[in-house]
Every structure is written in structure tokens, then in C-alpha cells.
Image (cartoon, rainbow, N blue to C red):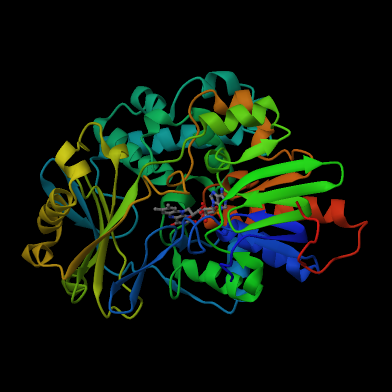
Length: 475
Ligand SMILES: Cc1cc2nc3c(=O)[nH]c(=O)nc-3n(C[C@H](O)[C@H](O)[C@H](O)COP(=O)(O)OP(=O)(O)OC[C@H]3O[C@@H](n4cnc5c(N)ncnc54)[C@H](O)[C@@H]3O)c2cc1C
């Protein structure tokens, strides 16, 4: 990786963004013999994956972390890069807490009242049935697309989950999936996500679900290993400010390097791409899409302990609750259990009945951390009050990343249709949001990269591969 001062260069393809998607695209292009330069705004690779050193070399995932059995492309990449996975810790019982009553249960079905279980199952059945009618590649053509895109998942749950407890649980599960209040997520988007991400059971479950395994050494390893392979073709600390197309090709302007190329892959959320100036300007549909794009607002907070003490009590560290801060908790300890780590998701998406946040909790780390520990004591006992450290990874207010995973407000899918993926002349779009399936997941980041590379390789196939070079007349 390089961080030299601004120079002019040339390559077949410039990839903008060194998250998992951009680096996978660059890796694949390099394997095809194409010259490639990756320009990254931040001072590290990995984007929405980040390894946090929480206890003297013990790493935990501050961003994306889980992969599941249907995530075949990212699993293939793990293998290709010589990395490995380990099972998410599930031995023991999960806690379920509602209205002050704490229960421990085994398996995947929380101990809801029978009426709530029936209500939950019926809502799940209806959602899955509706999702089956959403075309995976063109969701905006679904028979009821306009109606479904005119409302939100949250409002649908309010109207169709009759039992408050099942409504609460659904709202909680979907808040975690979209990292956003379901009342801000288009119903059409939710149905499309269900259709293209393996169904609700797969999406919410750990065993046989999307949360089954984690990457040894942390999910950011995928990106650091890819970047090591690419070497000085990855330029850090070099935000792309402009992409200028002319008849001969493209000039990508960035803080440290201006690069002339044949094709560009922009690998980030549309909201992030909106900071780049395009010449000629983007088609109206794409430009407007970037303007209205919204990423989820959840962040992560970790309580680190000397040991995973809850395991000795037959608990697996997971909890689903209506407590103020720790509404969803999981054991995020390293595979050897050398320290204990409890992870909770925090953010404004938590506001709503039973998930209320005060300004102090939102704005003051010490108040937030104290509130978290209070909840953890309620769940796991007095030992939870004595962490060796509390660590936070905020995804709100990052300089180059618009937030957690993406959602879609009502109206976006039907109005902007395929603008997320349609190339604009020599510009191709990657990033998990441009994935044909598993959007929002690590899997989606890899699939979107592979799709963009397929587009680029077809257009480049007529020209012979070039070596990356310093251009004499680049600008
Ligand atoms: C808290 C959290 C939990 C998650 N949990 C999971 C999970 O358990 N499982 C799962 O599968 N997925 C999960 N995800 C989602 C997963 O992390 C993402 O889908 C994936 O990392 C996205 O990768 P990407 O390359 O598409 O985008 P990003 O990682 O966002 O990469 C985009 C890159 O572009 C760079 N950039 C932005 N603007 C510019 C510019 N102007 N010039 C140059 N570079 C620029 C950014 O700095 C960034 O590095 C989670 C995400 C978060 C935040």
C-alpha cells in the first residue's frame, strides 16, 4: 500500500473504495491480468469491517462479522485467501426478557406466550408469501410494488401483528437486520431483502442462519489480506474528488493520485458516492438516488471481561430484551474464550415502545456505558458490572462511510429502480448495495464486486491488458 504525494498514473481500471467489495473487484481484475489502482479515502482498508483490539491483541469485530451457509461467495473468498472461520458461540441458553420477567430458553424460539407465537408465525408466513411475489432482479415490477413501496415494514407490522409481544419481537429482529427503525424501511425493500437473502429464518438464525460463523482474526482480515496481495496498487488516504469522462477514457482525481483509466468501479454506498463530483454529470435518476440514500444508524458497544463468566452458568451470552439499552446482546468473545466479550447494538433505531433512549444515553459515552452495564447486570448478574473495558464502534459520523447497512425509505425502490447498478458510460457500481442477492451483507459486497468485474471485463476484452504505470500526460 502506498501513501505517497499526488502523482499522475494510468491503469486499465480504477477502483474507488477499499472496502471488501472494492478490494475483491481489484483482486479479481488483477487475476485477469488487468492493471488496477484502488483509491481509498480513509487511512485503512476494510470499510464497514474493522478489527478492534479490545484486550492486548485480542481482536473483535467492530463492523460486519457473521457469515452463514448460503453466503457462498464470501466463503469461497475466505478459502481462497487461506483464512478460516469458527462457529458463533451458541452452547447454552439464550435470555429473553420482557416487562421485567427474565427467562432462559434453549434453541431458536423465544418463550413467548402461545398467542404471541401463533401471531409471530402467521406474520412470518404472510411476509414470506408476499416476498415470494417480488422479482429478485426487478422488485419495482412486483404486482403490488407501488402499494408496498408506499408504506413501511414497521407500519405493516403494526397493522398485522395483533399481539404486542410478537410485534415487539419482529420490530426488534428487523431493527437489527436493517440497523434502522422498520418504520423508516420500505415494505417493498423488506420483502425484497427477505426474497434475496435466504428468508426470515435464515436471516435471523445463528445455527443454519446468517450468523453461523465468524472469520478467525476478524472480518477485516479479508480486506487486509486482499490489500497485501495488491501491494502498492492500493493508495490510502486519497479521497476521490472527481471522475471525469471523455471519449478516450476516464480521469479519476484523488488527493494523492490522479489516474487515467478505461473503466472505473465505484465501490461504496450511493450516499458515499454523492461526495464525488462527476463530469459529465450523472443521469438524473442516479444523481437523485445518491441524494436520498440512507444508511442505518446502529453502532456497536462491547463490554470486555476477564472471562466469559456467563458460559459457566449455562448461558450462551445472547439476549433478546425490552431493556433500554441492551435490547440485543451476543457473546463476541474470541474462539478460545481467553476473554469474555458481550456485544450490544446501540443507536437511535432503538427508539420506540420498549426501546426508549434518553439524550444522555445517546450523547454521553459514560452515561451510555453505565446504562449498558446496568442492563447487563439485570441479564447476567453482578459480575457484569465489572468489565475490564467498554469499547464502542460508532458508524454514525464516520468521515467517509455514511452509516451502517443501507435501508430504503418508501418510494425509493419504485422511483429509482435500477439506478443502483446501471453503469454510467465507463462508471460501474459495486459495494454491497449493488449486489444481486444478499445486499447489505459481506456476501453482497463480494457478489456486487463480481458483477461489476463481469461488466468491466466484457468491455475491456478487446484491449490487451496493461501494466499500471506513471502517465506522462495523465491530466
Ligand atoms: C455494525 C455493522 C454490522 C454488520 N454486521 C454484518 C454481519 O454480521 N454480516 C454481514 O454479512 N454483514 C454485516 N455488515 C455489513 C457489511 O459490513 C458490509 O456489507 C460490507 O462490509 C460492505 O462492504 P463494501 O465494500 O460494500 O462497502 P464499505 O465497507 O462501506 O467500503 C466503502 C469504502 O469506500 C471508501 N470511500 C468512501 N468515499 C470515498 C471516496 N470519495 N474516495 C475513496 N474512497 C472512499 C470508504 O472509506 C470505504 O472504505 C455490518 C455492517 C456494520 C456497519
